Length: 294
Image (cartoon, rainbow, N blue to C red):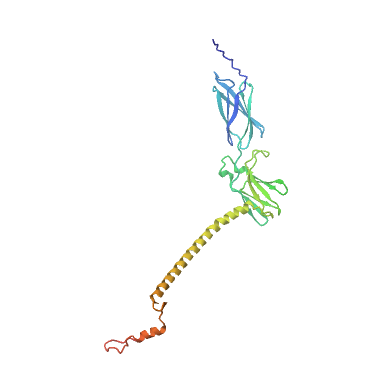
């Protein structure tokens, strides 16, 4: 024997299993289940999004009969902190979830150029890779002095460079550049960090020195390679000429070698004179041959 029991739906229960599926820079995808299985009618949910930084909130309405609900919250700010509350439209018990959106990326190619009495920080524009970044926001620059164990805020700029002066000899510094915080030191971009200790006496090499040495190496290495190739070709040419001269001399010596004497015999000037004596003398010229005097 069995009996079928149908439970009366309780609309005062909260949504179940509220969680975040995916979080981006300006949106978040959340998911939850209905307070009870297999709703037999449309259910109206209230989704409240509270900005924990700016202390503002927005309410969205979602109407569905599905047991599992997926909803995308849009128009969020990068690096923000939010509290999401989901409950039925009749203000039943609620489910809550905290969300942190992804901050803006760090600026690329942060470099240091050393001048006479100051340094210049350079970096690529963040707008090249961040469509959500507005150049009017600008960048924040911070400096950490490892010797004093102190961090200082140097200022902000809307340019892609920043001048830093009054650096002390013997101090090691770390500079950070990030997208400017949108609200009271919050909702900031990821920082790009660069070490600098060229003014100090420490043995550690600075990042700027490393970058410059890399640039120099990119020029010096090909030049050295070309010099080595040229020297190699020169040695080969000299070696081939030496071999030809040696072979020519050997052939010449072999052609004058006397097996009876066991040595090579070379003609002298006297020999050449003797050979000239054996040549027939010119006795005269014919009358019909014109004489040409140079």
